Length: 287
Image (tube, rainbow, N blue to C red; front, side, top):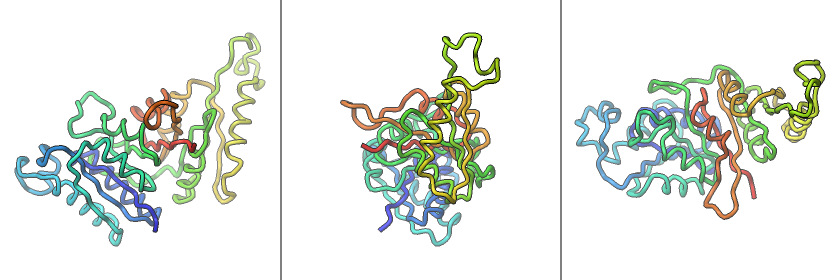
């Protein structure tokens, strides 16, 4: 049986948008959708769900949260198998546990208790950093609507150890009929001096190394996926954020640190999760 795609909801507008996006993704993958709400309290205090239900905020309960999200998903993707769960526990740990039996986890940018100035809610950041499966954080819009992909591009950041990220990105590109753009950032070393490749027009060692890393990472991509390679001089965070402006999905890898619980997010993953113009998939490395 295919593992479901799990989406975490909390009644906020970003989480409802994530549920819409997850419905589209589950339909693409041809897997069931599981809608999960977890909290230690029974009542939800917020305006989005109350408006959907036509109830006072004080009367909205946990089951209402998952039912509204599931109803939107059914309307968006009729016939999609959907299950629901309202769990009386901390959302961070509940979602990480749900991810053990999921093909992927989808979350929004902010939690219900998030401060307006925060760019990414603590629940989403925790899940992205600790889940065993790929985590997709839905970003990009300031309203309550999930947008249909329009750019036809899936971008993957190729680091020192790309691992599963490239494979995941290739699968996503194939499902969408999109171009897979593999991006590798490189920095010229100080020792090149006057021979800087951007000055004399000749590729330096770092640029050549970046191109070779791209070739190696893309070696196993299926022949049916259209691939573009981009070796770009600059900080990886800046390079990937620039690529995300015209992408439908940005994919990055996450490393597992020894002696720590779960996946440890590096500075690049942190930056794109907070600032990307499109949804970001964080893919754990195997082993």
